[in-house]
Image 1 (tube, one colour):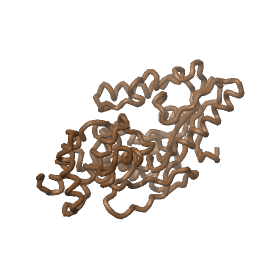
Image 2 (tube, rainbow, N blue to C red):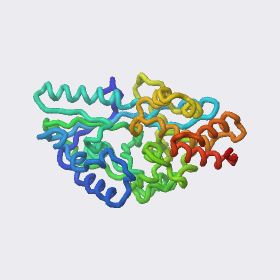
Image 3 (cartoon, rainbow, N blue to C red):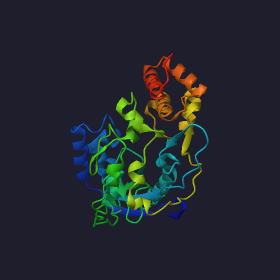
Image 4 (cartoon, one colour):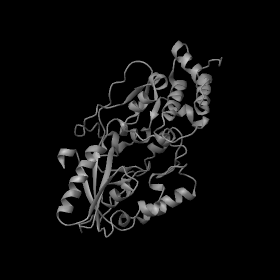
Length: 332
């Protein structure tokens, strides 16, 4: 599937994903989801391919790498974007899956493609299809390739030959991802406390807990730390996916996110998931980055913080006050 940059494929059975279903219910019952929905919203649906396609017999799975060379950091006050959001890796992946589904339907079978969709737990079907094993950071690790992959699948009534042998665990005694997590969100191998995971903390609505704000550092969206230190990924070096229409967005200028119009801010956010498409959550994150990284003597920084301390939105006021104190400035 070279035109779309697909490097790994496999086939899983369309049986209920019992392991994933049990894990999801355990996370919910243990209070580890922190309001996260996605595949947690309806575990019976997201763990049963039959609910995606009635009569399904198999699930075709594909993985597309997204590890691009890191773009140069622009000058000035910048906020870091997690690698999975640099480009839209899912657009070409979907095209590939649609092509597979189209061929299966042309052959007389039912087939529906899913990518970045809450209808099915993609990591679980990829694991079942023999693409990789679950790392201690809960990401799927592909042998000889690591974790920098977007996953998607086609659920079909076609009786495709399924993978029978799971990939053996390759982590061994390594715990680098646990040690590297800036908030200790990996509470045990393969178990993430979403309330401490910065990838979720920076996406979810509401106030960022004060004890997590310093750990945010210069991040505006997502967190890569547990993957950055993974030897399976690190030793491989950069992988160049097939070209996309997007230029990589590795950094965003912070002050324009706080001074621009809502339309400007949402345009810079583009394809990323954002609760209710509300720019206040972007501005909230930008205020935390400001408090962690700005020059306290910068007059523009001081002006913006003063403006947000008087903002009509209490969520933004709270973070502006924190950023002001974090920089050692007096609120006037």
